[in-house]
Each structure stands twice: as C-alpha cells, then as structure tokens.
Length: 329
Image 1 (tube, rainbow, N blue to C red):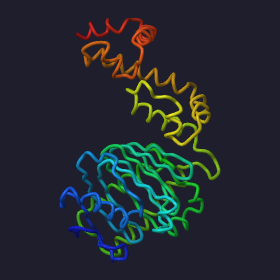
Image 2: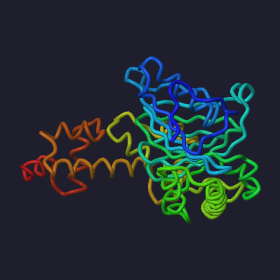
Image 3: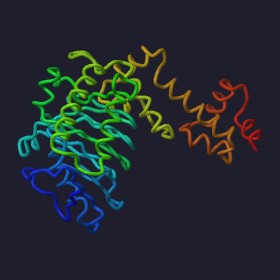
Image 4: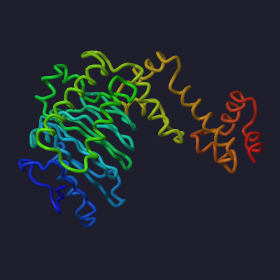
C-alpha cells in the first residue's frame, strides 16, 4: 500500500494501485489544505470549504485504481465542495462520479436539480458542469470516478442523469453498492490484467444499473422520489418548530407547488405527514419513559403550542399526554 506524507502527487503522476491519504499524519493547521489538494487531484477539482471550522478537521481517503476506474473510500468532517463556472474554466475536468452514501447525509445540487442523499443511496454527478455538495455531519462515502468517454459509450443518455438518486431497493442497486464496498476493502493490489477486467466488468454493471433504475430523459424526477427526499429532510429537522414548506422546497431545489403536488399524489400533504410523525415520536418518547415531563416532549418533537399539541395528541390516541407519561412511570 502506498502512503503519502504531506501533499498528494500531481494528477499527472502514475497512479498506484492502492493509495492512502490521512490528515491525521499532519498538524491540525495543515490538515484541511492537505485534504483540499487531495480532493482536487484525485476526485474532482473544486472549491472546498469547512462547514464546522470550530471543530478539529479529520479526513481519510483510500483510492483503488482499476484500469479506467478509480474507486475511493473517503471519510471526512463537515464540509462543502463547490464546482462553479469559474472553477470549470480554471480547472477543467470531464469525469462522471457515482457516490455511495455509507454514513451521514449529503445535499447535491446540479443542473437545477437537488438530491438529498442518505445512507444506502447511490448518487450520480458530473464534473463537466457546476455542482455543489454539502455535508453537515461526519460522512463516509465510496465514490467511483469514471472518464466520461467510458460511460458515454455505454450510456448515451448520460447528460440527463446528474443529481439522480438510485435507492437501495431499485434494480441492481445492492449489487453496485456491494461491489464498490468490496473494491475499497481490497488489502493488496490486484494483478494488472485482473484489475483491468474488474474495472471493465464494474463499468458494464454500473451502466446497466443506471439504465434500469433512473427515469427516462426529459422526464421529471418521479413524484415518489421527491416525496422520499422531502420526508428524509423533514425527519432530520423534526425538532424545528419554525420549519416550513418553503424551506424544504428550497433545500430540494423545487418549487413549493411541485412539492405540494408530489405529496398530493402520495395522498397527503407535507404538513399533515410531518404532524403525524411528530405525534408518533411524542407518543413513543412518553410511552418509553424517555422524557421527564410533557413540556420536554413538546420541545423535542418540534411543537410550538402546548395546548394545540395536547388536543392533537388526544384526538390521535384517545388519552392526554400526561396519562401516557404516568403509565410509563
């Protein structure tokens, strides 16, 4: 295994079969700049910034080269990575990426689309066009980097796939995820011929999965995908009493009307669904004795009005919240 000490090699350097970067080998003040250089050289040239500068930064990358494909296992503290028009001119790049979320969540914006990725999701993005990745917590991802010509020859509709999510239950998704995970777990480099064959086989499998799983060119992301992303966001912010639909729509990169239409197709509204989740969480916390008093549950579940909460709780469960809390005690 090759290990670099202070700064990554230039992109033109011959790649080692397995290469490791670890910020822990450096003093804190050098870690982020080292990581930023590693991202630019071995993933996509971009402007990378910290999202939690008050906390010590830590990151690690393990890159496995398989012929025409590189697969990287990366772990990092909260950060954002932006590739805008100026960055495209200054640092041109033409690769396609498929990212597997292992821990944490990420928000990807590209081509006026927004993908809110959670654990198990596969996400596609493209370094030839502007994008923004935001990670608000410690995250682990496995990212496959593929030259555009390699994917375009197998998938003619590639331009329509940016910021698309493949869910774990979609065709071939689990096979892709397991393959990527197995690749970065390799302990020793493969022979050159084996590496080439594995890289080519992975490309074929990946192209087939994308073709089978994603919506057709020119069509909107399916309503059910948008609803799923919205529900993920709502659950992640369930304790926020000021959360409104305009904020959710903005974060997902869609209009408020589009978001409401998607929930209507699901037979509900976003607010009604969120209230139901808050009530279910409140009942669980009370029934399991995880709260000292009802007021604590009201705050923890994002309710802003004690009386309104009590009336809604009794309507849903037939008893007042205090009764559930007393029974749990």
